[in-house]
Image 1 (cartoon, rainbow, N blue to C red):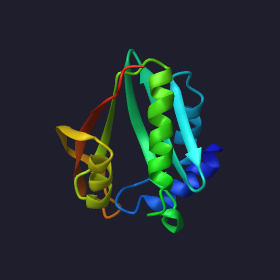
Image 2 (cartoon, rainbow, N blue to C red):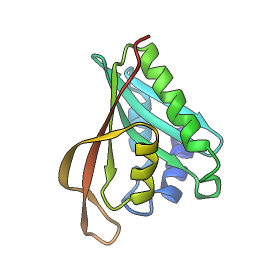
Image 3 (cartoon, rainbow, N blue to C red):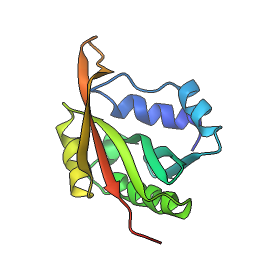
Image 4 (cartoon, rainbow, N blue to C red):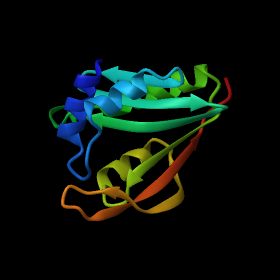
Length: 139
């Protein structure tokens, strides 16, 4: 999936916050620690460094939501992270994004912290980020 395709999905999916731009995706894709798991209308993008993985962006095109696409790319990301030596995965999710929080909890992620006023919303207001964590099984 190209940076432009990732940005298009993110623009349609991230209604609760300002989405990444194509340039943001391009810069991230060019880094050697980056892991991209992409499927039909969904992606998980992150990095693996020193035994830890971090999901930087996970998005599903609204037309593909609730069809298993997000779960498929998340599981693929977890496997790719484990293959690179990750023992745990971290991510941030907007506190107001209840569907995403529920999804991550159903996938085994638990709250690990809070970042106050982390996200900028389209209307200019700020939303907290919940830091979530999942331990990965040993290879």
